[in-house]
Amino acid sequence: MSEHSEQITDETRLSDATRISDSTRISRLPHNPSDAAPHNPSGTAPRTPSGTPETISGKTEDTMAQTSVVEEATTSMLEQSTPQIAAFQNSYDRLVHSIGTVVVGKTMPIRLCVTALLAGGHVLLEDNPGTGKTQLARGLANSISASFKRIQFTPDLLPSDVVGITYYDQKHGEFEFRNGPVFASIVLADEINRASPKTQSALLEVMEEQNVTVDGVSHQVPQPFMVIATQNPIEQLGTYALPEAQMDRFLIKTSIGYPGHDVSVDLLRQIDVVDRARTVSPVLTGDDVLRMRETATSVYIDDSIREYIVRLVEATRHNERIAVGSSMRGALALARCARIWAAADGRAYVIPDDITELAIPVLAHRIVLAPEASFDGTSAERLITQILNDVPTPTLST
Image (cartoon, rainbow, N blue to C red):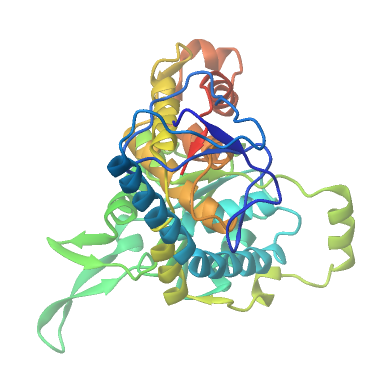
């Protein structure tokens, strides 16, 4: 970080559509945006007195000129991305609002599902029966003009029932591949833990590689592609727990919870609406989703943010109450989701708050608790919260 930093107020704008909160500390641009800033364990930065110009010591005129060029180039990059970020935010809000008419009063899980879609990942919805898991998944699918398939997982479901089969076409005298329901842009895997491990593993390749291999031949799935899986945590009789390798494939795990009192009363007023997801019309197309994914790649992540992500992931590996910590896939997932979170907030850069808000849904399902922690009733979410409190939050350098 630079030696001096400025306090930004709510009235300060970085660009035409970017606003900073009072709690955000932003220092001057680094000489090279790709250079890592040293980590500040205290999480604070010295404040420059109001009205006092900042001074730069120990630099030649050439160095100062080069620094100015880098600052102007980086600022120009952020300003040029503003129209795209504003369009991203508008589309994101429209999609969240559309799904919000299906699952009322549950903005956070809806935003997490939309974030996973735009980050190119998959979602695991785990909650009690009747909380709207399937409705949320179908509401998301119906809000996008793209192909949608639903797979009801049962103990007798076979892998070929998911990915497809190769059969002999007697009319043409040759073998042909018949696509399974997994060949859709949005795939709802309903009650995924009711299928056998062999059938569950049929999803592993397609979730990670975006293709299916049958009889040695690879078949690409449509793009965008997303798997939304649901499972009930309380109905464990006759179910098969998802293995750690498959849990790691889900970008985000979240729950919906029961609606509040006022929302419940309002839903009873609409008792004649049997299937709320069916009432939703598309607000985006598959191409819109792909364009939003491309826009998200331009969101700037400072090296101090990258170091913060790595410190959080490493802390899960060294915690005595965690038997298996998060893999590097968890760190990558957190960074990818943070870019979507920032763009959805109208920013072309990631701030520490993006990381702290996403850490639990992105990392909690990737860790395995130690036996003593499980016996004590400690949850993975509580341990991630403890790690967030222990790891110093960095100041932002852009």
